[in-house]
Image (cartoon, rainbow, N blue to C red):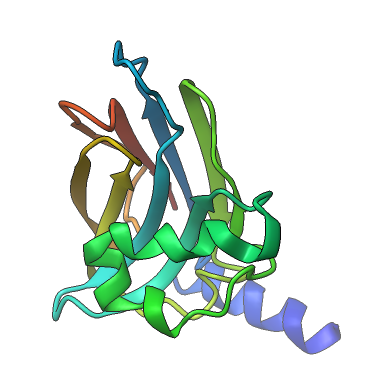
Length: 171
């Protein structure tokens, strides 16, 4: 504990920025006027410049179906499935949860815990993919730099399965 305090003082004295950072993702599930509506499956991840997955942030799917039947539709999120989904054992603690209703949803992460804890400095993209049974599929991405040098709010607008997706970064 005493050593940790000394390191923090040294970094501040040298003018080195603090290494803590926060990332918040906002995802809007739009109201659709269709004959048969099912909540979308949604996957969110951080992608490196080489298009590899640096961190899975969340996966929303039909967790309540009997015998894990909801998991068989995860592959409809094609991009996520190819990048990391097929290697994932679901349900995954802290990552997977039930689908979300129409509205705006917000998730927050910081670099002191999974999944961002080991994110190296560099260029990344936040990628959000949604797919819906008897519906369509949509993918949005927002490029960003990690760790953020200053507070930023970035966004992308969906046109069918996703509404506005926001990315808020804080150093």
